[in-house]
Image (cartoon, rainbow, N blue to C red; front, side):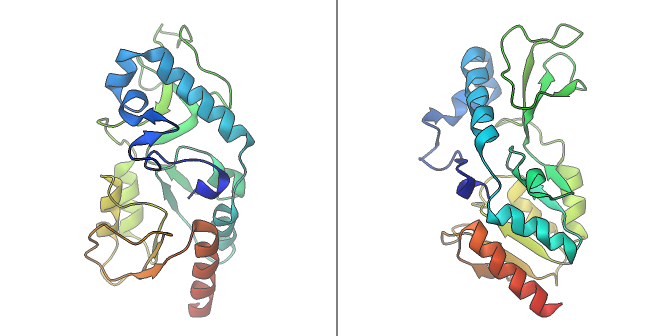
Amino acid sequence: MSAESGIKTFRDQDGLWENYDVMEVASYDGWLKNKELVLQFYNDRRRQLKTAEPNAGHKGLAALEKKFKVSIVTQNVDNLHERAGSSNVLHLHGELTKARSIKDSNYIIDIGYKDLNLGDKCPKGGQLRPHIVWFGEAVPAMEEAVEIAARADIFVVIGTSLNVYPAAGLIDYAPAKVPIYLIDPNPVTSSIRRKYTFIQEKAGKGVEILTKKLLANE
């Protein structure tokens, strides 16, 4: 979804994310092995995000709120949906602009685009870590995401491989007769057991085409 804004996904380069092995910077084992590396990696991502801008896809989804009730469930950790104007965004994998304590799971703070360093602690003395759901960790927002999918009248999948679970399983919770749209520039490699309309475009152009289809059927 955010690729056209210059935000790379961790699947861009065969398991490398900005030239790092994803398990070194996106797993709890990686955190235990080298906290400084992990903190620096997300500091860099935060700086990158500060200069990034929402693309036509983000803006197109925000514009759909004029005609529809739009709920966005995203695997992305950036804030580009919010900056584009979307008002109902659920982040499955955490948020880059927030930090949380390793000692107190309820201590979550907004740090904006500031760096997070060793020695930055919560009031209880716990080191602050990125508010990111790493590989192998539970996805706290999954239950809410399932509820959103289960009451959808239209279900749209944008720019995901549909290979990362549990998020990829959300499509199975959409009601049986709900129209499903899949927007991606690449052919679908995942085995989807549902009938869907495939729009083979990047997010910006794909959302434009989707909008025309939805408004034509309104």
